View 1 (tube, rainbow, N blue to C red):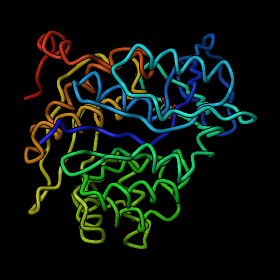
View 2: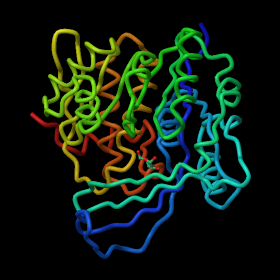
View 3: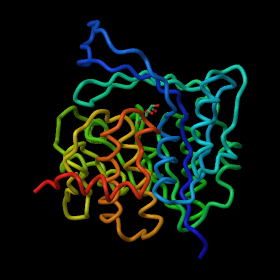
Length: 314
Ligand code: RIB
């Protein structure tokens, strides 16, 4: 068998980030720091994370013909990521994310998809040419749902493993989950999806919510939970993989770091989901200690030194 690869079909954004003391409530105005602009987008972040974890990685997506597009291309050019299927579209701006980060590292993100919305079926089909058994496809939901579903079907038909990061949660998520082998979400996304599947607005807790999603979709489920690490549905219940304790400055792209490292771990040993989650939790813990998206993602050789300097939770 040849090298197992990670394919990413997803968004590339310019992240406009402002630091605030606290995130404003609805209707409130707060003052923030000066704005920094960096390369991001869930697709780009996950591709960079998989590559920095050591996986052979390709990204499929679209940027605009503008300075933001150049910024993202420049950032990716320094990475071991195959960008031959990153297209440039004229007349539509590069996707843009407006991010606030507070003093505890929590954030809010609003995405204006721009060029990400123009990704076509033909571009996806060309980008996934050659995908097959042993490969992993990472999908997020900042590109149009029909395109995401097309990518999932193509990968599944070819025998690859489909990992769906259901962020942001769409209004109709059920059809997509039928195409997922593994769903990766944070606690808010899990609760939202479980409520839709149960048809109620009750907060079930992680275990009940995971059970609802597994029962309705059949996909495996992993839930990231910040400083609590991650939770995985193991068939007869939920297991926790704890995170090292770190001083968080910015949680942006921590979930993407987790997913990229998870896929890279599964590419090495597809039967060791828990081992891949342990690897991913450590990488995400490093990412939250640094500001920005792509800028915050660690290389695999950084994990030992940084997490050795932190205290494992009991
Ligand atoms: O997950 C973090 C990412 O979400 C940011 O980089 C932003 O671009 C949005 O896609």
